[in-house]
Amino acid sequence: MVSACGSGLGGGRAPAAATVNGTQISQQALNDELNAIAANPGYTAAIVQSGTKVTGPSKGTFDLAFSNKVLSRQILLEVIHQEVTRRGIAPTAAEIQTSADSQKTQMGNDAQGNPLWNGFSASYQNLLATRAADVNALQNALAPVDDAAVQKYYDANKAKLASNCASHILVASQALADSIHAQLVAGADFATLAQKYSTDTASASKGGDLGCAAAGTYVPEFEAALASLSPGQLSGVVHTQFGYHIIKLTGRKTSLADVRAQIVSALQTQGSTALSNFVQAQVGKAVISVNPAYGTFDKSTGSITSPKAPPPSAGGTAGGGATTTTPLAPGTSGP
Image (cartoon, rainbow, N blue to C red; front, top):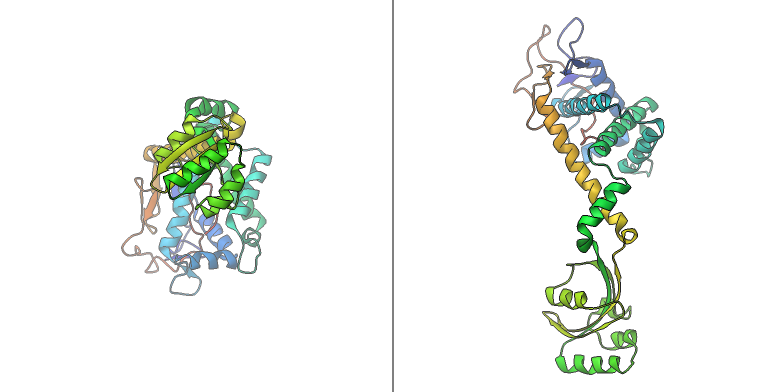
């Protein structure tokens, strides 16, 4: 446990909670964050509901493991901040505001529908937003999501990004499929016959429309038929494990504009992985020390391992506990 008003290490000035490459994370900075979170009952309630223990056994105390998670996050965020400073990519005021808006959305609402974000003080909101903006700045530096990156990804993955828009009629027998196919070739309306005959009720009600899907979505026989068609063209009878299909390719989306959102999402996922790998490597090279009252910092996990028993202090034990917030992956928010 850790005291909400100090390190619990006895009299005198409290030592730093942790040090990262010579930069101290003071005990006061840890306590301030813990107290800021404790002052938001909706947020702490959401944390407890998620299965995380917050408070300690005594009044005004908080679980040591919980406090360690907060301090671990502070250490990782300090590593990121130092790199952002080194690269000279400090976020702008506009980027910090964007991060604040994103944090508010991610945190969600309490049981009464009030934004959990609103339960924090303005100073703590600014701290959270600035941290998140640091994370975004470093991720964007490591893996940009700009027009050039989007174009490069598109050029390298064009075939995989294509999506086929199709309709089909599914029936149980070859004879019926052949009959329907003949009617279509003679000029019958595809949607009308799909509504009348197709056993795929979900698409039949929409005239056989399956919507648009990325290549590889359907079973191999169906995919092969789609690949052989041009927009507007009708397939022959295609047999799959589901029955007998007549397929119509209604469109094929292959332009950059069609798949841009898909590419941006993929690049953001790659960026998140790049950031995690980079931070892990930086942590491995960093000089990190932690006040023994909290335990020891494990570089392989990026977290503090609590001592088996609190180390003794001038007063006897490590003290009562510290208010805390659930540690989050850098740049995220919410319990």
